[in-house]
Image 1 (cartoon, one colour):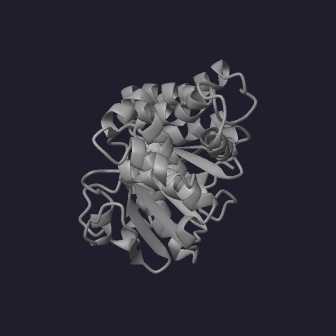
Image 2: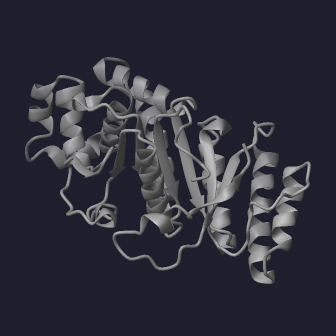
Length: 310
């Protein structure tokens, strides 16, 4: 695979508009990491459990499942994450039983907006950064929420910090936030498509993320590129723009226009971003068409196209 999880970050969070291949990307990254011999955990939070069938395994909510050598999977239940948060992280079982483990659960959650999101993120952070439950993983891939919901998720720890004076909860959330904004510990993969509507939504998401994150934390993956273009061919160019221009000439007219949209929104982002001197890494992913479950490993290895800017 052209882009490897051998980079220093331990936590990889994947987001993007629904239908852009977010879950497939998460699956491909986790498989690649395990294949490299790195002990890996793949996480999702989905009632149906979209990822587990890709391995041909049964779905068991909030339970670690060993799906392949060096690869585990779990589908998190936010309510159970909240229990883990108070009982196992904060060591406050009495508080959890008093406010959450009863019929008052819904009322208290509404009274503290974002508490479920923080519990979910804290669970991911602890298993990635602090060997939660005695499980030591070298890489953790989180198939996170889509676009707008994801940005809200990312902003929640800071919002709660601004509304609490101190104590155990604040200390825990501060450690979580430090992990999330540290580009050496966390990488964000933003999935998109070479289409106008999706491109505009991706631009909005990236602009919001860059209010909180260093551009070094971001990788944009443009998915569903037709496979016949061979990006391994040498391109004599000295600039990012000339490379993209050369890429465009290799496509048919309709896709060329869509790829140009991608070029435009990346450059418009740089112009409006206060950190415009920092470039955002990007990668292309191949359109694999309709896939059967479990996914063929040889086909999956062709997903990321062999060209990326470092």
